[in-house]
Image (cartoon, rainbow, N blue to C red; front, side, top):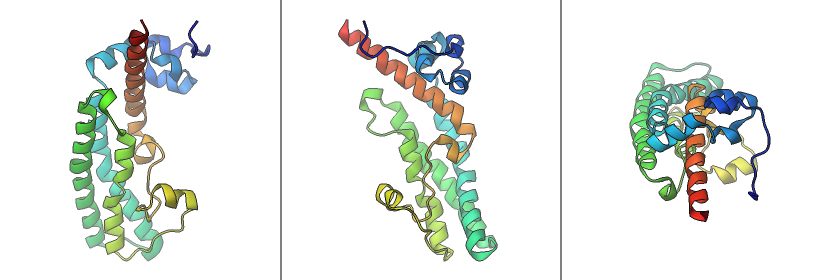
Length: 190
């Protein structure tokens, strides 16, 4: 008997629909579905995740700057808005490249995650906000310890904090990676 059995759950993942599996709480067995297996074996989840991150970052940087600049100054000046747009484009290119480089590696060689790289993207809106004279926000001790360079408490807790469009594609990538890891573990025991 497997020492870590998959708990019995609703069978939304049987269809291979990771989004439905997530909605029903059936993510653990989503990795058993044929569609997730196919995606994992073909690498079909890495490219879409990288593309979605590249599309989402400019808007996230601009929204982050606008929200905090407005909260402090009551408005967003045109030069701050332009700096945020520029920073967003740089984030898409630079963090996008980091994500693509990471996802090009075999999963056993990946020493970080796409979400961790997204959390590092706080440097782009942070630079703009500092230059605009926006003071750092008050953060709790845990956040200060975990993300010391995140003066404005922007580090995303999950993909959807950057953009709701990243939630499903991030979940699909994670399920495919988990499936691949599980398959390798099973094969090594055989």
